[in-house]
Length: 253
Image (tube, rainbow, N blue to C red; front, side):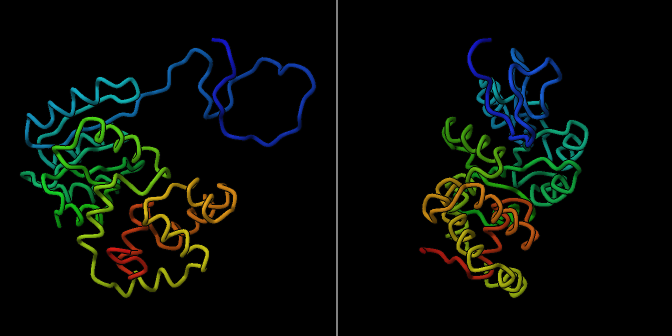
């Protein structure tokens, strides 16, 4: 394979004159000629046609693969524990165990896969409950294939943006009531961290926030890490939920 290797994580160390001696690839860098490992997806939905449609679309992508299917929440939790997928696409309304409790159990696994909640309604209070339980986004069942694929990649990226646009609409239309605990948690943030959290709630990426605040993107990543730690949030979506619960961000802003 010719040309420059893809950029990997920066590793501190002295510069060397001349070519590097042969040795093992640095951690996090794919060796030359090795294909990246696809994002592993588990589908949990009691509707076979929905699963079949998602399976067809996902498996058509080189960077995504379906590793399992479950027809109810309880089986979904079992398969998530056994298969260790990167992402779980979870229906809300299912027999035996609903998607809300199933999400709560899945995100408690170690390591925890990220959960994308499926719903048939754009404004579904159950979907918001699933997000509070630990889901990282929600997705409409009638979403276009390209929207679904973009949502899965976005959630897997983790720090790219808050979530698909439908998740932001859900939070805006079903904004949680003010919560004193959330307000207390937000009060521990610095002025700059609150500014970054508001920008996160608007769906801006780290790069976009850095550009608007005229700082380095690495600085924003550091702020985001501090925000997640102070709010006890597992990802950006959970942090944004806390921002809404605290009244830091309100619908229409």
